[in-house]
Length: 45
Image 1: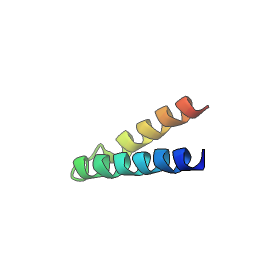
Image 2: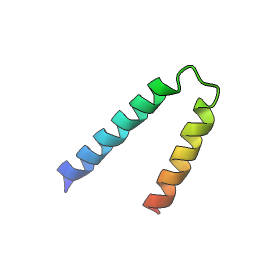
Image 3: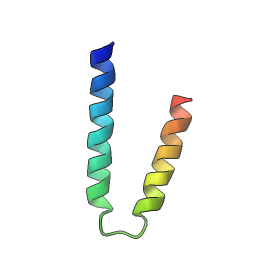
Image 4: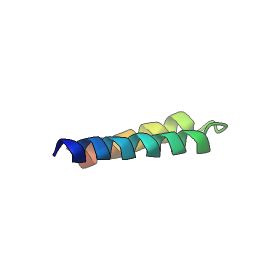
């Protein structure tokens, strides 16, 4: 259980890191991250 939670957290961090690199030079970075977090929260709740 704890291992699965840690694995999921690691996947999320890696995904955010990759997205951050892809949108590093883009003006839409903040909006993209905001939309991602809103969608992620909807899936959690």
